[in-house]
Image 1 (cartoon, rainbow, N blue to C red):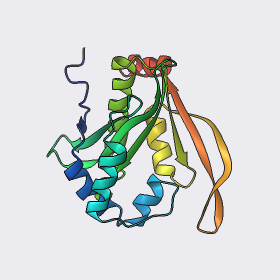
Image 2: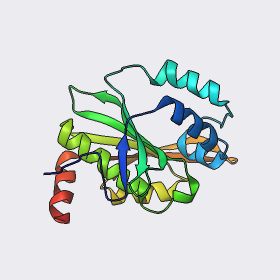
Image 3: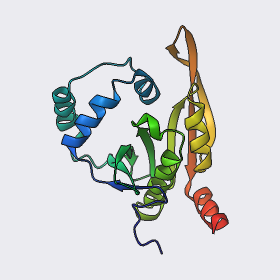
Length: 189
């Protein structure tokens, strides 16, 4: 039995802190590549005050279909990003997951994969979900590899949905079922 469901090998999940999140997100959003990997909307530079207002108004609602956590490094408790479920369909045991690492110097080091594994464990063991899905942009191969390492499978794509850099890009749908996740857990021992 897992003693702390919110802790992985490299990271742990913690409750949102609007003050800390607004400051971090404002800093991360200055990096247009970060924003382009996070969202399909054009990057917009917001003040810390504006981000905090948005979080208080839209994200701090106690909606049963959204569960978000901050991602912290185990080593020094540094805030790395966020991960969470949204559009949770309790009656179907289905949700979408979103993840973002804002600290560029921590990209490509396994923190995102570890955080995804932790949130999947939470979703399948604690929330009794049947499936977890996500959308990833075609131009983000690092994220695609990370999701595959966590057990996600390609389920389809929406061709040419997004226009960036003068060309059209696909959105990839990926998903993992509870039985697939359980099989991975058995194999990893």
